[in-house]
Image (cartoon, rainbow, N blue to C red; front, top):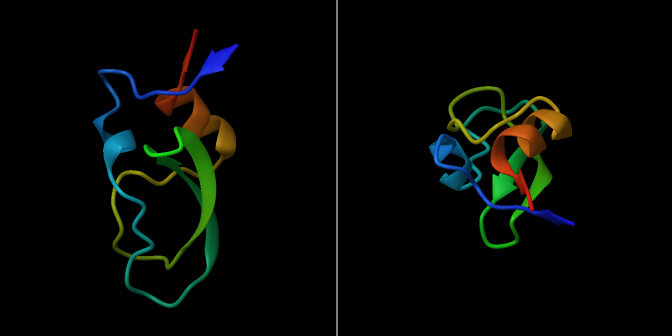
Amino acid sequence: MITVAPTKATARCTLTVNAGGCSDKITKYAFVMASRKCVTFLYSGCGGNGNRFDTLKDCTDLCTVKA
C-alpha cells in the first residue's frame, strides 16, 4: 500500500499549483495536498513556484511516502 503525504524535507510539496504568468503550455507535474496525489498541469514557462516537477517519478519520489 502507498500512502501519499509530504515528508518533513518537502515543503515545496505543500505549495499550491501555480502555472505562472507566461503563455507557453509545458506539461509538468505537481503535488496536490487535498488529494495527496501528483497531477499534471500546464506550466506557462515562467514564474510559478517550487511545486513543479519534470516527471511524475520526480514528484512521487519527493512528495510521497510508502506506508
